Length: 289
Image (cartoon, rainbow, N blue to C red; front, top):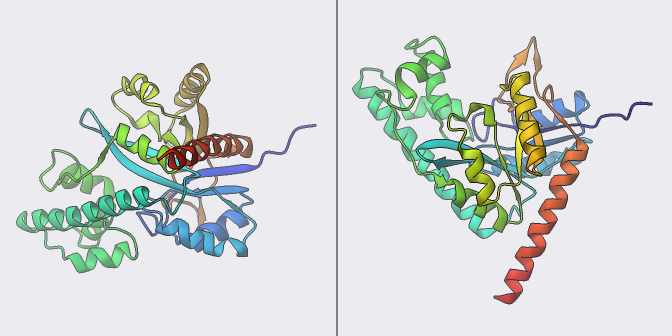
């Protein structure tokens, strides 16, 4: 008799970053699609997570505390997924507020550059798209589509918004080590997000020295070969394997792809166990201080 899989999607975005569904809508769809556990992993913010926790009593879906933090390693942007951290950790909240402010000022500077290039966008219309979320390049791209300057988000990035393009503006990011340390000190588990999108593969040898806890093996943009490759890498180095849809609002027909890429809940339990270790170590350090 086959064991029933408890689907767990540990990579989900909401309107509090660059997703199109509210935390409530995400939870409702997760419940309707019989997803056992989800993690709201908005970019550099846990505001959406807080709203999800408030709505959790309405749906029979387990919420795994999560966040996706933008870091750098040798001039490449690397994303870290943090799980089961203390959502009231002072240092984590301060760092996320700094990253949020950096995103906001960056968005304003990008709009100024686009204006100088003859693309007349206003901050107001981009905020209308972002809603409660922090302004990001995808929001600016959608405003450009509304103005018919480009026909797609990809075109906006290819012509204007990507690195080395005329409207690109860099922003403050943590180093990869700073990001991992921040998550660990908040009692959480640090996972490398969507490794198949990382250009510099040497990073994996470096992060193992720094102290990464796992690899996101299952991802919507990973090929079957990528999945096998990173699963083997995780097993060889005794790392936790995670996965998720990286859902931002994509639909198949009228149905969100939320939960279409998933791991079994058994992996979630490993994350929790590892987080307990970091929480205990943090408590011991606090007592010694």
